[in-house]
Image (cartoon, rainbow, N blue to C red; front, side):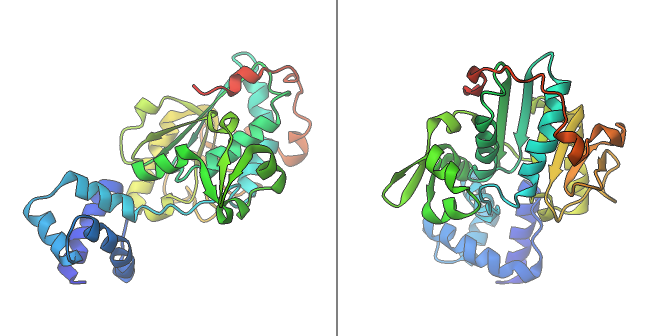
Length: 300
């Protein structure tokens, strides 16, 4: 690929999505964008860059951005964040929110839906305990194509074998040939929408929990900082942020404080560290939540 063509794609991707592509990733451009060129009836990537320079088509640009957006995910990916959600975060928030009995969760860069659906299954398992509470799980991604896939909630044998407990597969999925369809009782617990993390987040409303895992690694320091600052603005003062294991706020923003005992878990920096309970205290959290309704599991 010509250097000038690489620079065009690099600039376009950074401007539209914040994605940073280094020269050693030019092979990734070629492998992911060649099918897009064919889709548009263009003989080569060079022809695509010529069209972009001459008469940029927003639909073509959208296809390019979506093709380059990393969509790697799996059910209960990395396991630990979901244990933290269930054993640490939920007990704290159930106590703190016992008056309003509602909790909002945002899964940013949710890809094909495995992360928010994993959270939904955890909550569904606690349905009797959570009677009377309302949970809203909002899942966003920049790609319409991947969001459509997430909404269909149909997964291959390979996808359901990656991290999904067999009991959940049997309980919450139906098999059709070589694919597994998630049941509506879980699908309806998640609301998907298109959102670019570079955009203004005010329309998203406020959240008690934000999962923004394994996406900041694709941004440069400037955009990482801006995204984290905006997330802080949408997170309740006593809310929780979960990042990927390879991600950190250190040296990027002072809006969050990490929990040294639980990698990837953060609270807003103006709150004392004691806001986060220790593993032994989590199980001892008040059980005032023993009366809950299944109506909260309806889609909003």
